[in-house]
Length: 171
Image 1 (cartoon, rainbow, N blue to C red):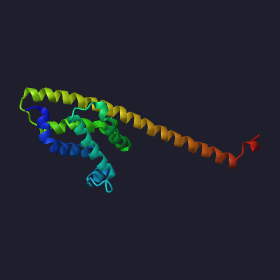
Image 2 (image 1 turned 90 degrees about the horizontal axis):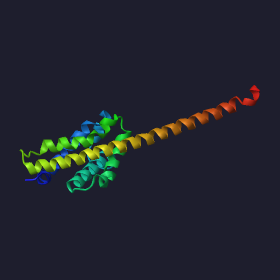
Image 3 (image 1 turned 120 degrees about the vertical axis):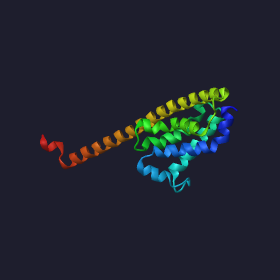
Image 4 (image 1 turned 30 degrees about the vertical axis):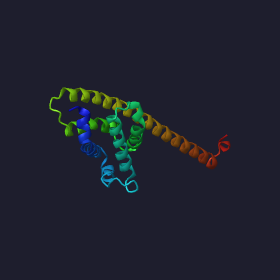
């Protein structure tokens, strides 16, 4: 039996394992929120991550190109980039997919399954690289916003200072 067939048989268990592994990478306060269920109104972050993880899994299973999965990955990375996580921990969730698959599927030396797994594994690695690129893009955007806010605060402080101590009095 090939890897894809083994994957299909264990897909639900793989997804559940992957989501549990992802929850373990959440910050302490985020973990509590992640545990509150999949209701989009009670837990929009957990709902989005669960939905997009499922879409990534399905896309990989269908053999979609990694570029085609970037939209799903981007939605997760948008969330992870604002959480209190190191860059490596923020993108770790992609690599955890490998662990979830290895934990749930046993192919006992089946050559066909092993070759398919290696191809699948390479696609997950490509997804990891894309996740890091996306994470960097969103963190840069956050820093640009912060710099803009600091400049606005500085300009407001200068204007206030000018009102209270006009430069013409010093001359």
